[in-house]
Amino acid sequence: ETGVTQSPTHLIKTRGQQVTLRCSSQSGHNTVSWYQQALGQGPQFIFQYYREEENGRGNFPPRFSGLQFPNYSSELNVNALELDDSALYLCASSFGGGAGETQYFGPGTRLLVL
Amino acid sequence: AQTVTQSQPEMSVQEAETVTLSCTYDTSENNYYLFWYKQPPSRQMILVIRQEAYKQQNATENRFSVNFQKAAKSFSLKISDSQLGDTAMYFCAFPPYGNKLVFGAGTILRVKS
Image 1: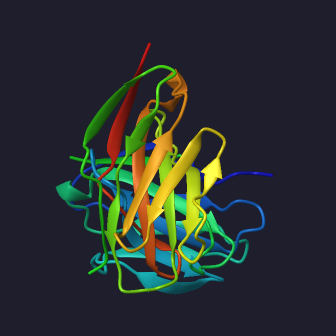
Image 2: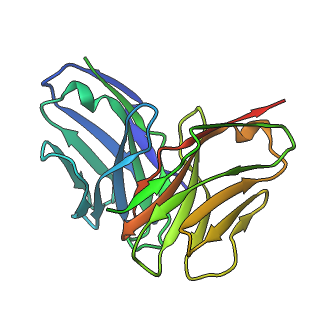
């Protein structure tokens, strides 16, 4: 069974640029959630995708957008990068978005915005 | 707003001893789930244990157990026979909507030899 994978592992961008982060869900999972984890803090929910449709969004501006593909992998796109976007971005997959469905996390992508 | 509070920023424990990490949460729901996740320095978030609120019995996974007090909205994690590999950041998490998690600020646990 393949776990959740993310790419790239690290990324450096400058303010105003755009970035795309990628996530492959665990085998058999159809739901992907994205979280932002600032240094020394707990992760914050960005949004969730279930069967290629957005299924809930946290308190993040529209410049944070995403996609889910037919194979249930996902992308997180961030436009007009700001310094505060520097963080660890975590992807988690699950089988469905129900309350009891455990999420399994990938290793994360560390984004640094200069 | 649904919140999760971890009041202990850092904890230390000697190898082989027992430590308890605290977590309180706020919800008006009656049936829900609670989770503890571990994030080692390698940073991959790993599920430690989960509890279903409608179950009276506290969840247990090997050396890890919880003390779930529903009325007090308290969900503490007990680690018995602590090992060096338990050194990590521990997060309490609660999903107020579906399985979209709200995390606490975390507790850094250091296991000393």
